Image (cartoon, rainbow, N blue to C red):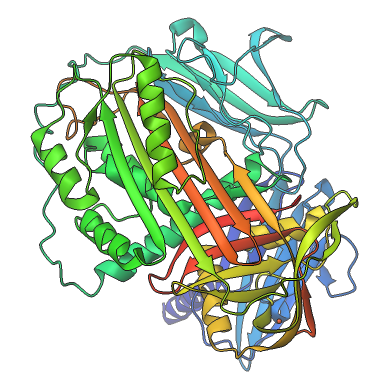
Length: 598
């Protein structure tokens, strides 16, 4: 019996120091395998990786790469040849830790989804992240043994009448939306590339829904919870972190839909209008908006902290909001009062004609952006119930001036073409620069008046792959670490060359709303804190951003509308780059953009 007990103890110890993971991976994807699965003191361990019994080293052929002295094994891109067993052995003195991965490379992913009749359902499909999207995927439904019919769908531009909608055209995410599911919609759906490669299989099971009660605001009539700790030291940094996380999330989404063109948006404007809407959101809609703008569900002081943030930014960034509503709907008193309290907005009734409303809105936009943006809407539908606007306008002068003499040079575009552009040039510019390894970019910080800075992230070359590599590494943590790093550096004399630019960009906000998980806003949402009689549907959402780099400084403006119904002797940014306009005082991003064609 004693021998048996000792054997069991040994087996238990071995189990604790070993682990096995089964992974199903699509071809073309990127995979990173950690050797150590738990927190450990194996700081000087000798690490060995084997693939199907053969040792992997730096000279091994194929797509595998050892990182951080073997702590990680990267496979990119994954191919069928990478399928098999991966074993990591970490050995230090008399202790060994083994971790095993079984990798299966699958050509298609199979999903089974149960859905109630009458509900909407997402059918998932994704291109591998390492691939380039040159055409949309094709969707088919199985109609018999060996028989399929191709689905025809729109882009969502014609409203809710479409049965099937492609959510993100020309995006790595090729998911579709099937509306108002009927019993005959049950079955098997296939997603494949234009070349015929299967990407996903979705089995839909349609069930009879339980009896539901009509929508009612009866249990959602209370006002937004009061901020009970206005002097809290955690509220401000919490909001700063939320806005930065939200900003980088927006950039990651927008770069997918605009992979090579100029890109510009104001996260502070988009966050502002969604937060204002959050004031009246309840139930699932409230939780969806909170997730979208990256604030905790119990952060009741979000509106109070946003008001403080606007006050802090007042010297450099002018922010304004406005609400227009149909006189036939009654906004709740609590929403009206809290809009005035936190956003300095007293809702205004819409006028009788579309022409009057269009002029009223465009005049407000021009006024609040100092005429940087003069036109936002072409018309206002008579069925519009609510329009929410958020405008920001920024003007900052260079703390170090550029040579006023006109100068021209050539900007190398992503396709290799050279474009002659006017330049901002100074051969003795006092500039903070650094090579940020984590971002694989040369970064420069240009100080501006109003306690703000313009950061330019310059990839190693003008290739698409180098630009994308920088963009993929731009997480909120990486950006904050970059800013903290450049704060520790002292300015040095550098020869600086920048292109003069003037960007005026309108990103696709409908796709962005969907990617933020706010599709319900487009189909019926719980805004009982705003209007307590029925659901409201978002029928239009727009964002327009303007930014100019001139010999004087940086000028920028943005408007968001939601309608319901390393050191270097020189720094030359004459190739595509990413830029962040950052408030040093409030520690949040104001504008984010990409310049590929000045």
